[in-house]
Amino acid sequence: MGDMVKVRWYRTLTRRQRRILLGMLVGLIAVLGLLGWNVWRAISLPQASSPLPTPTLRPTFTPSLTPTPTLTLTPSPTPTATPLPPFDIAQAGMIASAVSDARGRIPRWSTPLTLVNDKLGMSVILYRLYDAYPPLVLQLQPYLQALRLWFWEELRVDPVAQAPAVAALYASDTEELYLRRDWPGARDVLEWQIAYGYARAVPDQYGDLPRLIANADSLDHRLALAAVGDGDALFSLWRYAGAQPGSVRAQALTDAIADAVTPHWRLTTDPLLDDLSQLSLRLGDAFMTDLYAQGGADAVDAAVLRPPRSTTQLLHVERYLADDVPQILTPLQPQLERGWVLSATETLGEALIRLALLEWSNGAIAVDEIEEQTAHWSGDLLQVWGGPDGATGIPADVVVWKTVWDSSRSAASFYGTLVEMMPQPVLPGTIDSTTPPAQLLGGRWWAGPQGAVCLYRNTNRVWLVWGTDAAMVETLAVAARLAK
Image (cartoon, rainbow, N blue to C red; front, side, top):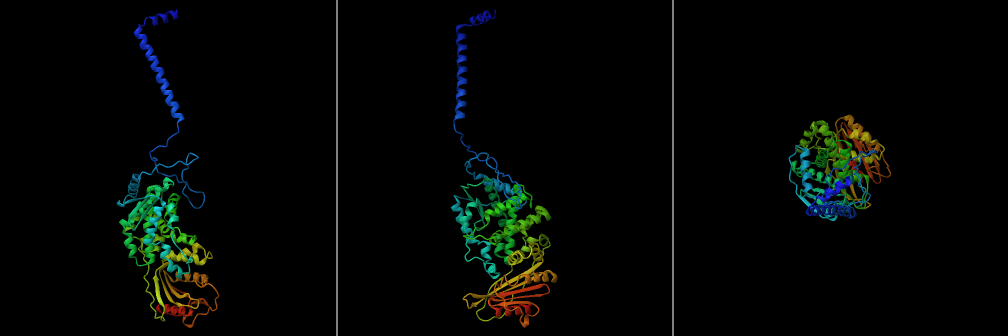
C-alpha cells in the first residue's frame, strides 16, 4: 500500500517538475562538495601569521621568591619563537597620552619622536648624549680620586655594549625621544621604556631641570635635581602601570628601567661603579616613594616645581617638607708655598658621604650604623690642593674635608667612626708616627713615608685632612683649626 502511494505521487509530477527536482538535487550535491573541498584546503595549508599588532602591550609581573624582585614576562605558548609584527608607531603616541592621563595633574608636553633604525643607531645616540652629559661617575672623578676611591686606570663609557638593552631613550640635549624600529626584545620592555622616556621629558620641560642643574651651587645640589627628575618619571611610570609606589611591582619596573639607562663601561665591572651609575635613579625612587606616602600625588607634583636642595632631603623626606637646607660653609683660603694650587672645592652631600664611608669601612661597620650617622649631616666642604711632583714623580696633593653635623653628639659619633677607619682608606702603608704636632694637640695624627692624616673635632664640626705631603697636611690642618 505504501509503495503504491509513492508510485502514484511520483507519477503525478509533470516532466517539467521532474527536471526542476533533479536540478535542485544536483545543485545540493555541488554545494556540499565545494564546502568539503574548502574545509580540506584550509586544514592542509600552512597557517599565516596575523598582520595585526598584538592587541595588548601589558606584561605580567610575578613577585620573585628571592629578596630581589625581578620582572617576569609571560612565556610564549609555542615552543618555538615567532617573530613579532612590526611595532605600530602610532602606539607610541597612545602610550604618551596614557602616561599623561595616568599622571593626571601634570600638563602634557609635546616631545618629538625620532626613529632609530637599529642598535648601532642607538649607540650613536648614546655616544652623543654622554658627550653632552657625561655619566655621573666621570663627573665625580676628581673627588673620587681625592677620596682614594678611584680604582680604575682608564674608565670609558661603552655605548655599543649598552645599546642592545635600549628600546627607547629620552635625550635631554635634544629633548627628543628616540625609538628603535627593529626592537627584537619583549614588547612589554619596549612599552615601559617608551612610557618612561615620555615621562622623563616632563620634569625637564615642566620643571626646567636642565637649567637648574647647570646653575646648581654644588655637586650635592646637582645630584638632588637629577634624582628628582628620574624619580618623577618613575612615579609616572608606576601610575601608568597601576603599580603602588614602594610595591614589589614598582621595584621591578625601576629595575627594568635601570637595566636600560645605566651606562656600561668598557672592559670594567665593579659594584661601586654600578652604585654610582644608578645613584640618581635609586635616590629618585626612594624620594618619590616616601613623598607619596607623606602627601600623595599632590606632593609629588609639587616637587617638580620646588625640587629638593640636597640629597639629604631626598633621603629624609621630612627634612624636605620642613625646608631644612644644608649650611653653606666658607672655603679655606690659606697662604701656601709656591707651586700649590687649589684644584677643587665641592660639597659632597649625604648620599656620597654614605657611599664613601661604606667603601672606606669595607664591611667593618654595619650599613645601618653608617646610615644612622650620616642622617645627621648638615653640610660639608671638600677642598683639594695640587702641588709639585714628589720624589716618585707623582704630583703631591692635600685634601681638607670639613663636615658639620646637627649636634655635638652627632659630630662626636662621626668622629669616632673615622677614628675606627683611619688611616688606611686614605693613607695605606706604614705609619711611623701617631703623635700630633704641637699645634694639633687634641686631635688624631698618622704619618708615614707616603704622607699624613689629621683628624680633629670642635663641637659639631669635624675636619679630616690628608695628603701625600706631611708638612703641607700639617699646615692646612692648623689653618683649618684656626678658621673654626
